[in-house]
Length: 73
Image 1 (cartoon, one colour):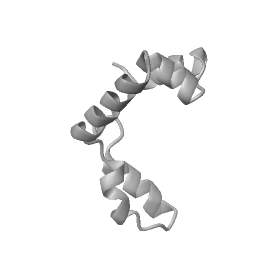
Image 2 (cartoon, one colour; image 1 turned 180 degrees about the vertical axis):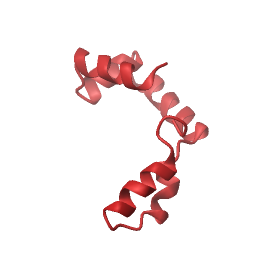
Image 3 (cartoon, helix red, strand yellow; image 1 turned 120 degrees about the horizontal axis):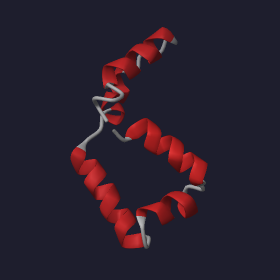
Image 4 (cartoon, one colour; image 1 turned 180 degrees about the horizontal axis):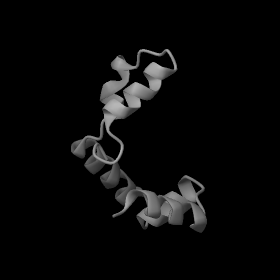
């Protein structure tokens, strides 16, 4: 999310590497309408979001556990 991983922090990271990432800012922000469209596409094509994560992205249960621990409050 923009709160958990603020776009400004990401820009600062790139700046430390000597990269001007300002043109990438639209891609570094979370946009609700983009997420809604992505979830709708996943829901149309896969039986569940977990099936998408495991089958399409190749994540296993330990990957999912780490994501949940990192991203969910």
